[in-house]
Length: 130
Ligand code: HEC
Image (tube, rainbow, N blue to C red; front, side, top):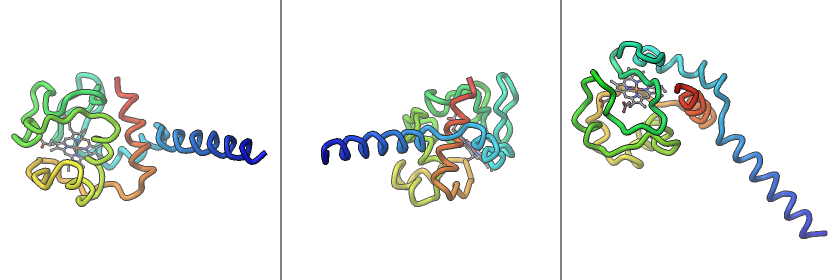
């Protein structure tokens, strides 16, 4: 009996934590308004002050054609997976913990999303841009 309860709570826990991790792309699209001032997302759309983010998930950082990146981002060796994206749109402290303090040499001036679910939702939205 105890074992069954244990199994059940394990399954529930895994289920809920993965669904939180997966995020909600519809909500993410709304939260992305904070990013849209600087980023287009349509295929082939122009770069704004930041690069177009079409197809960015899974891509290497700093390689979109026709955008002038900071030297830091070009040389950082980042691949835009969940972890890297989450750190990138987080508050300064979390950002520096993940990328190192030189991340301040990047050109993206953004205060960071406050709520963890906003971050996972935005990432879920970014995954749809392909
Ligand atoms: C004030 C303008 C601005 C805002 C707001 C902004 N960005 Fe950026 N973003 C930039 C700039 C500028 C760069 C280029 C950074 C560099 O070259 O160092 C960039 C780079 C990026 C990159 C790397 C692209 C690549 O080709 O490697 C990602 C991913 C990104 N931003 C995501 C976001 C997301 C998601 C948000 C919202 C949560 C956001 N940005 C908000 C200006 C902005």
